[in-house]
Length: 228
Image 1 (cartoon, rainbow, N blue to C red):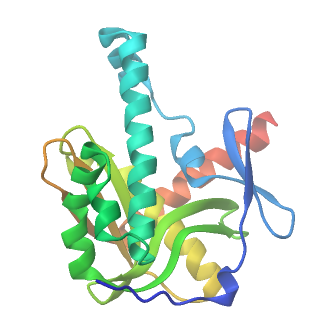
Image 2 (image 1 turned 45 degrees about the horizontal axis):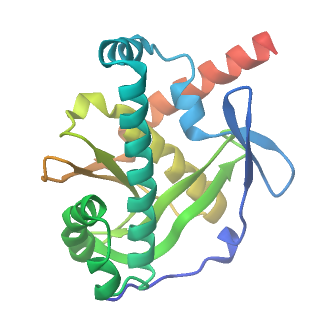
């Protein structure tokens, strides 16, 4: 399998980032500093369920699970990126750690079947209009439609109502990509590999999540300007 990467000059930049008071902020090529998409979407959210889970299983066990998921997610993103860059040979795939290989094997058939032209991988994005920045996994044609493609990993299958922020996150990337390139992206793809062995592929339309994105951005900046 070989993939076609289309280079856009308007995306020929990277953004530096730093954590400031618990918020990840990116610096644009013009020197402006904007919060990350994930920081804005999590800002002010009720985290009581997370605290209850940590208390129930203990801090040490919770930290191990969280770190394991983060490490595996990083490795999965790297593997998918190398695969789409045509840099992952069959030998390298065989040498992967079993859990990561399993997760990649869940997503690979869907990638092979659906991904066409690729416009960005681990691409930095920002928007002066939204006052937002971030880095997206993949911008590519999916089943013939230009899409934001996001990879996730999980212990078990996710109910759709649990992951609405995933779709809002992808909506933000789609809006930022269009602001920079002028190319509209209306389709969102969230591909989740999990320990139960059955991948979940969610394909959504961007317009359904614009209002939620605008609300999250508005709440963040209203609070920042009020307290800052």
